[in-house]
Every structure is written in C-alpha cells, then in structure tokens.
Amino acid sequence: MEGVELKRRISQFDWLHRWHTHPITAPSHNEADYVNRKSIHSINVQIVCDAAYIISNVEAKWSGSVHDSRIYRESNLSNRLQRGEFDGHLLGDRGYPYQPRLLTPYPDPEPGPQQNFHRAHCRTRAWVEMTIGLLKARFQCLRHLRVTPERACDIIVACVVLHNIATIRGEQHPALQIEDPDDDPIHLSAMQDGRAVRDTICHHHFSD
Image: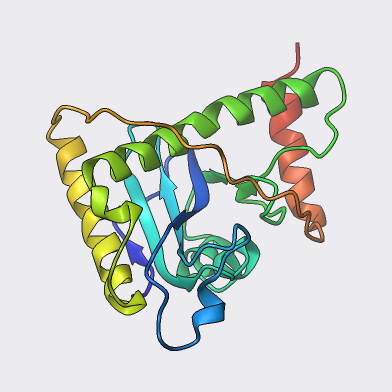
C-alpha cells in the first residue's frame, strides 16, 4: 500500500509520527525484516494528524525494522514538502531530520525561547498519541493483525479512513489507553536551513 493522502493541505502545525501496529503474525517470507526494536513482528506506519485527531496522510507499507528516517525520506509527503507544495509545518520527534517544513525538538534547549519552544512541542505530541489511541480503540484488530503483511497494510489504511469519517461525524470517542511513546533517540545529520527555520519560529513566537 503506497502513501495515501486524505487531506489536500497541511495545517499550520500538524504532527508527523511513526507507530508500530504490533504485533502481526510472523510472515512466511522475509520474517526477520518485520522484527522491530522491541523484538516484535510489526508493520511500521507513518501518519500525519492535526489537533482535531484527523489523519491527513498515512504511509502503510514498511516492515517493522525500517527506521523512521527512511520511511519519511522515501515518502511522497517528504518529496512534496521539499518541492514547497504545502504552506504549513510538520512537527516531528527526534528520529526525523531538520528541514524547513519539519520542526523537531532542540536536543539540549537553552533557557528562554528554546525551552518555551520545547515545552510547546512536547505538549502538542498529545495530539498524535491521542489520535493513535482513538484509532486502536475503535479498531481492536490493529492490536494484532493475523493476516499477511500486504493485507495488514490495506486494513490499516481502511481503518484510518473509517476513523476520519467517525471523527468528522462527531461520533462518540471510544474508551482508550494511551501507550508509552515509542520515541527514537537517534539524531540525524541536520540541514542548516531546517535549523534556521526552527530558530526563527522559536524566537518570534516563544520569546518571553
């Protein structure tokens, strides 16, 4: 399943995140590729969501061992962002590169604007954690997909579409449990222009 765009624009700040639909049944082919860092067979899924818990983009095709950076780098979303097709910004965790349209947290924020930016960045992460929690609560099958990886990817995208419909219709939220963040401490080589954009936003909007 290729990346699926579910909304034609990015809001001023949307969240980019990778999550594991774990576990899946061990596939018969290339079984080791699906083992993630927690030694569980899984599918890696990249989503973009907003503060209303709407998922605007989903990339569901990667095995559990693939790193965040590769998923993002090879996604259609990344290419479109670099071509300047979106006006907004994405917020991502530390596993993603610095880019003009992708804002990640400061590794060691200094007192003042950087710490203010860092706190706001962390608070907004609740959007994506809540979104994933709602999605899994609505569709319990995502907690263990007993199908082939290819079929699992189709099911994930279908659940995302149905989740958006339910959210737009204002249907009652199911009871949910927020899972521990699966943050990735790896820092990638920074792009200087990405740092500059982050610094500009930090000082313009988060100064005391």
